[in-house]
Length: 248
Image (cartoon, rainbow, N blue to C red; front, side, top):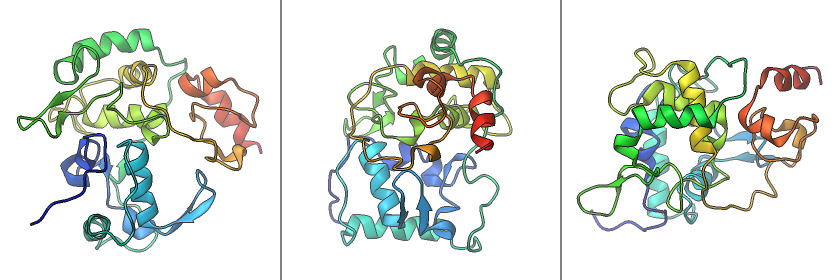
């Protein structure tokens, strides 16, 4: 089988893309091959699957990009394409990606989220979000949620709607599913706020969102075109931001 390059912070794709990217709403891969190449507002360019994979490696795994022609990249693209092989072009199957949660009518609370974390998450992810390595000490059994070995500030999961939707449909791990969740919507939003409030690796995101008016409502870093604060973009409440941006 040979060896593969070590290019990440120790986490691997399956730490976020559950069941190798096949779990419904578990950061599911099924819509990738059918929708790429596609234009992405974050880069302001048309991106290939290879570019999207490297984005994930550099941001969510805080690692180094792969060459498009490397055996590792070819294997990843082949696998992702195989997962979505039966999906028609431009289609997005039910269960692809991450579940979209209903908004709550207040700002998400890191303080309330700390309680949710201690009750539901700490036993796997640790007192300080440090995660747990597997027996060989080379991979994460339960990934770190913040700190030096976690995803960096450029990762899409730092957006609260993404993180809350992911948590609601999948956590606690191997217990919750999207149609049989453990947490309420409010608990998911709050624990996402707690995780997002914690320190994590830096990333140069100065070239992200070249058209700042296209930033998502919950992108946590300014500048913005809508006049709302960075704190409100990070934690909410989001309804007013969405309403104003829809009027443009």
